Every structure is written in C-alpha cells, then in structure tokens.
Amino acid sequence: DAGVTQSPTHLIKTRGQQVTLRCSPKSGHDTVSWYQQALGQGPQFIFQYYEEEERQRGNFPDRFSGHQFPNYSSELNVNALLLGDSALYLCASSLGTGGVIGQFFGPGTRLTVL
Amino acid sequence: KQEVTQIPAALSVPEGENLVLNCSFTDSAIYNLQWFRQDPGKGLTSLLLIQSSQREQTSGRLNASLDKSSGRSTLYIAASQPGDSATYLCAAPLSSGSARQLTFGSGTQLTVLP
Image (cartoon, rainbow over all chains, first blue to last red; front, side, top):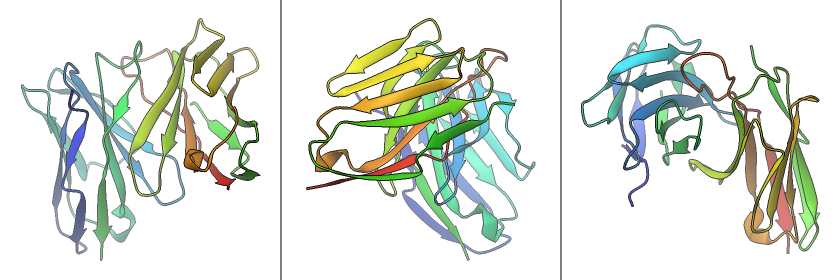
C-alpha cells in the first residue's frame, strides 16, 4: 500500500520565480492538505482540498495556490518566491477531512529560495 | 484560535529510561489529538491518534493520554532506545469547521544516549 508521495524531493529557486509541488495521496484517501514547516518550527497549515475545491485556508497570501485533480492528487503553486518561502513543504492526505483516522504525511519537498 | 505548546523543547536521556513528553492546547473543543514523530529533514510519521471521547491510546512502548478539561496530552515512552531519537510533535484540530486543520506545537527534540 503506497503511502503519500511528494515530488520533487528538493528544489532550488531564485527570488521572484514560481514553483509547483506535487502530491499523491495514500490509496483510498480523497483529501489533501498542505503545510509549510520552517526550520525548528511545527508545520503551519496552508490549505486543504476536498472534492477538487479549496475547503479551508490558513494565514497564507494569495501567492500560494493549489489544485486538486479528479484522481485526488494535488499541486501547490507558489508565485513570486521570497527568501522566507524557504521551508519544508508537507502534504497530508486523509479520508474526508481527516477526523476519524487522522492525517498521513508524505516525506516533504525541501524548497530553497536564493 | 487553537494554540499548542510542547514542553520541554529538548530532552536528552540515557537509554532505557521511561520518559514523558507534554502537549498543551488552549481550546478544548478538539476533534482528536494526534502525536507524530519526525526524523531530521523528513516527513511526519503518525504515532497515535486519540479521539476526543477517548482518554488514552497505546501502541507498543508508546502510550498517549488526553485530558480535554485541562487541555493536556502526554506521550509516555517506555524503555527508551537510541532509535527513538527524533522530534515529537502533537497536533489538535478543532471540532468546528469543515476541515480538520492541524495546529502543531513546535515539538520536543528527543535524544536517547546509548
């Protein structure tokens, strides 16, 4: 049973560029949430996608956008990259909104903005 | 707004010791509470999930308790091993809202010395 997968593993970009991160949920899961984790901090909620719609959004600017596809996979897009966007980006999948069985995380994508 | 605090921020113990990690949250209207483990630079591994109606959950050498009235959860690790060295995070999503947005503490960095 494949768990949550994310690509790429690492990414280096320069300020002002745009980036797309990808996530495939655990088999049987239909909801994807994205989190940003700065070094030494706990993950911060970006947004959640369910039924191809953004259901809830954390305190992140509109430069952060996402998409969910019919096969439940998801993309996170960040425009006009800032140095402060350097972080580990985590994808979590769940069944429904993740209340009963919780959320399961992928290995993350390490984004470095120079 | 939910706030989660984890104490201590770091802990170093000799192998074989039993230890307790603490997690406190400000809003007791939680849907569940989930404990995770994170190895350096890696994603989160779910350890235990306690539903809001439960008092504790056990998995092997791990036992997590939940006291909603006091806004606290503890993770007990028995007979610690060097392989337990990692950062431990707790997350407590609120029962309100459609998405189970996870609010994390900053984690406890555990080092088990051989």
